[in-house]
Length: 259
Figure 1 (cartoon, rainbow, N blue to C red):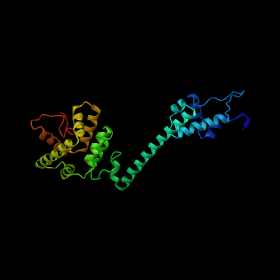
Figure 2 (tube, rainbow, N blue to C red):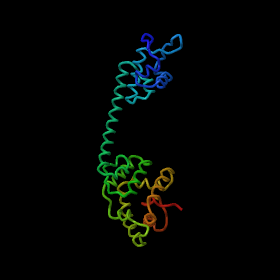
Figure 3 (spheres, one colour):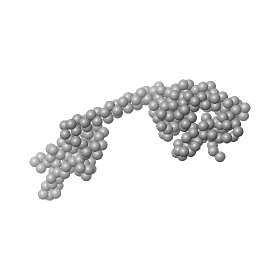
Figure 4 (tube, rainbow, N blue to C red):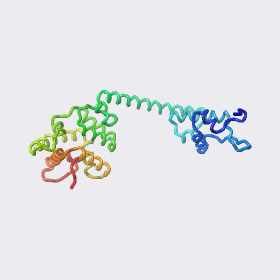
């Protein structure tokens, strides 16, 4: 390589620890000035180009989008502002990694927590498999404030009647199903009274105003419960509305099947 002639595109890319394609892309988006060409048409990069390329790569490695780099004010004040922005971004990333390590430590202690949504790491592991799965599904369609209410409800060990509901088998008799429904509906109604957001969630899901929400929660509920459990949920709805009137505020309305 003739130093007095500078570096080729491939050579400057190797020096900067990147690829020829990336260097060309930086040219295309205006981040890196095109070098002069020799008489034979080949580009030759100088130290100035290498320093600029290293600067771009450093900012990219820190998580800075290319568009932000292209628009940045390169004055002392502008660079200082940019560095403060990067520092805030890194601080947020460190905090997120701390949270992830906390969740990972909880999962190491309790393998079942891997099936729970992010942020539920300190929820009791005393949940049925279906309960954990349903919470995971909920995390994909519910707002954080609603998930927080669900976290509050599930952070305590399951009640006796919830255990009975979770343990129901399709062979459960009619009288036992009715007994579970009568006791379970009281507990669910109390939860909705304590956490109005959960009552509102039921109304939204049953009204169909958000078809995606309704479809996801309904499908999850149906597929995660056996015939006896679905029957108990229908009985709960009938207890709240004994004349057969179906209202959106029913404590079992997330689970009922529409005709």
